Image (cartoon, rainbow, N blue to C red; front, side, top):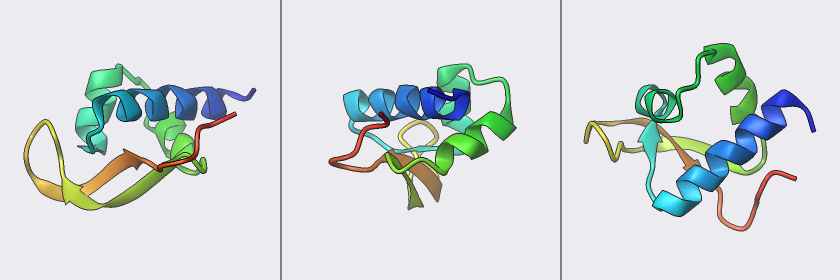
Length: 74
Protein backbone atom coordinates (compact mmCIF):
# COMPACT_ATOMS: atom_id res chain seq x y z
CA UNK A 1 0.00 0.00 0.00
CA UNK A 2 1.41 3.41 -0.94
CA UNK A 3 1.93 6.23 1.54
CA UNK A 4 -1.06 8.28 0.26
CA UNK A 5 -3.26 5.17 0.54
CA UNK A 6 -2.13 4.55 4.12
CA UNK A 7 -2.76 8.17 5.03
CA UNK A 8 -6.17 8.09 3.33
CA UNK A 9 -7.09 4.97 5.30
CA UNK A 10 -6.01 6.61 8.57
CA UNK A 11 -8.00 9.76 7.81
CA UNK A 12 -11.08 7.76 6.73
CA UNK A 13 -10.98 5.68 9.92
CA UNK A 14 -10.66 8.82 12.06
CA UNK A 15 -13.57 10.54 10.30
CA UNK A 16 -15.72 7.42 10.47
CA UNK A 17 -15.12 7.06 14.23
CA UNK A 18 -15.88 10.73 14.89
CA UNK A 19 -18.79 10.87 12.41
CA UNK A 20 -17.83 14.48 11.80
CA UNK A 21 -16.40 16.70 9.08
CA UNK A 22 -13.31 18.87 9.64
CA UNK A 23 -11.73 21.59 7.56
CA UNK A 24 -8.32 20.68 6.16
CA UNK A 25 -6.48 22.86 8.67
CA UNK A 26 -8.14 21.31 11.73
CA UNK A 27 -7.85 17.80 10.28
CA UNK A 28 -4.12 18.24 9.72
CA UNK A 29 -3.73 19.53 13.27
CA UNK A 30 -5.72 16.64 14.77
CA UNK A 31 -3.87 13.94 12.85
CA UNK A 32 -0.49 15.61 13.19
CA UNK A 33 0.07 15.40 9.46
CA UNK A 34 3.26 17.26 8.69
CA UNK A 35 3.05 17.34 4.92
CA UNK A 36 0.32 19.22 3.10
CA UNK A 37 1.41 17.48 -0.12
CA UNK A 38 0.70 14.08 1.42
CA UNK A 39 -2.71 15.35 2.55
CA UNK A 40 -3.56 16.52 -0.97
CA UNK A 41 -2.57 13.12 -2.41
CA UNK A 42 -4.71 11.35 0.20
CA UNK A 43 -7.73 13.47 -0.75
CA UNK A 44 -7.68 11.81 -4.16
CA UNK A 45 -8.59 8.45 -2.57
CA UNK A 46 -12.13 7.11 -3.07
CA UNK A 47 -12.85 6.89 0.67
CA UNK A 48 -12.67 10.66 1.25
CA UNK A 49 -14.91 13.44 0.03
CA UNK A 50 -14.32 17.18 0.01
CA UNK A 51 -17.41 19.37 0.30
CA UNK A 52 -18.63 22.64 1.78
CA UNK A 53 -19.79 22.17 5.35
CA UNK A 54 -19.24 23.18 8.97
CA UNK A 55 -15.94 22.15 10.58
CA UNK A 56 -16.44 20.23 13.84
CA UNK A 57 -13.50 22.06 15.47
CA UNK A 58 -13.62 25.72 14.46
CA UNK A 59 -17.37 25.77 13.61
CA UNK A 60 -16.66 27.74 10.40
CA UNK A 61 -18.50 27.07 7.18
CA UNK A 62 -15.86 26.17 4.61
CA UNK A 63 -14.52 23.31 2.55
CA UNK A 64 -14.34 20.20 4.79
CA UNK A 65 -13.04 16.64 4.40
CA UNK A 66 -15.41 13.81 5.32
CA UNK A 67 -15.50 10.01 5.11
CA UNK A 68 -17.37 8.82 2.04
CA UNK A 69 -19.94 6.30 3.30
CA UNK A 70 -19.54 2.73 2.15
CA UNK A 71 -15.91 3.10 1.09
CA UNK A 72 -12.73 2.40 2.99
CA UNK A 73 -9.24 2.59 1.53
CA UNK A 74 -7.88 -0.87 0.81
